[in-house]
Length: 314
Image (tube, rainbow, N blue to C red; front, top):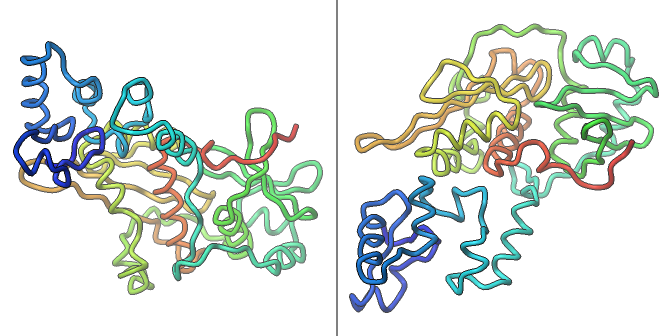
């Protein structure tokens, strides 16, 4: 492996091209073990970043370690600058920008709120398996928390302890609106289907491919990391694949993630399943957005709090 656990790509370094210095390799590589042994023989100690990565079973700190940037980077003299680490620390707390299947930033149409305000809320709550607060706001189960939808203010908040935090995430807001506006009073079939079995399966190709490749790259050799990230989102373990979890995005929208660990013979693989009823509630673009959202939250590995923004409301 030309890339070290710290993230430096040794193949673009002149010292490596000249044979003066070899790559450390990842924290799980043979090169890493050899480099550590060589450094310990010559210097009496190994690179603290490489040693830490090896002991924690981390391939690449930037991609795989939830502690990055840690003290090993901040107190060391290399490989990254203080400014770079500060940028990483700041941007890792920011959720990815919500984009549509066309690559455009997601915007919530005002007419969705207007349509919602015209609904019979009692019938809507029964159909969507949601409830109303004492102030008439909609209370919607969402993963392992709740969304509070203020119809008058046209805002959404997420539950935070005993209070609420304003949510500034267009994709979550849009999906919640689409759910309450279009959900049918249809029970789960408990028959799981893959993307290829959806009536709109042709949609999920090319640029509309579901966001599963990053899941494979991040967790394909780290089942414990996948399990920890899934459980922070309230995922329920199911007996499928090497690791599999069910996520209840909304009451009638369960989504199932399956992960197979890579080995010497086969590469990692990830798949997503749906209850057969999903197309009664969601069009293809809403299904695509739902999977992208869950994948992003898994990759951030911070649970639902990675979506929070704004001030807490009591």
